[in-house]
Amino acid sequence: MSRTAFFFPGQGSQSVGMLADMIGKEALVSATFFEASEVLGYDLLDLVANGPEDELNRTERTQPAILTASVALWRLWQERQGSTPDFFAGHSLGEYSALVAAQVITFADAVKLVETRGRLMQSAVPVGAGAMAAIIGLDDSDVVAACAAAGQEVCEAVNFNAPGQVVIAGTAKGVELAMASAKEKGAKRALPLSVSAPSHCALMRPAAEQLAAELAMIEWQTPTRPVIQNVDARAHSDVEMLRTNLVEQLYRPVQWVQSVQFAAAAGVTWAAECGPGKVLSGLVKRIDKTVSVSPLEQPDGFEQALVDSNS
Image (cartoon, rainbow, N blue to C red; front, side):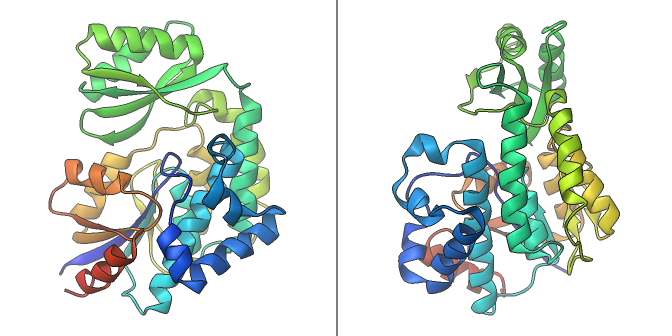
């Protein structure tokens, strides 16, 4: 039997003006941004609509913005009586959106959590001291070996996004050394990423410890559908496991390739990309072509997805 999933994007999918057509057309979408603004204490909708871009790209601003955009589309999906997926999954930050959709945590709690998560990530490593880069065109094992060339500097393979596309993170010097090694090993490209904190590496352990305390303070519910988590690429419904994996996600790699492969092996043939951009649609196409992905960010795509999900 064919099954379905909802995939929620992470940091990097944001842009000034994202979801503009949806915000202008659907009251529920703009209302969700207003709700987040009340929690945050600033006008999130104005930031998303008008920028400035450097402010939107600050980690503690980016994370609530992407979460809110994603949840707004999920709420609209429910309002339009779209089918309920068999699985939820999110890429990095997107896992929080998945947990809201699965009714594990409330939207208000999630907004506060991701703002705090962004702040903790930034405070763990001073701006400029850490870095991330995308390595294109190398096998995973070669990327790991390139990271080892950083020696005493911290550098790790942290996002296994698609075959031949792995993100590394660590100290600025460590990433620089690993990029040079990757090029020597034949990488097609080694691209520094415009980020303010090096996610998913050992430098984030202090932030993870503080995040664990924040997660312990909110109420958690059993998910309505299993959530495929980044850390182990497995579907979970146990609240303790969900919470533990969410903490570890901050300093352990995002196993996105394995997560998509798990979904496909579980029978998923159609998924929605529920959030801004089409990053996940492109990655899934490279991972497993048996899984069709429909982006929901534009009104026409949303309408087509409603049809596709029931076909």
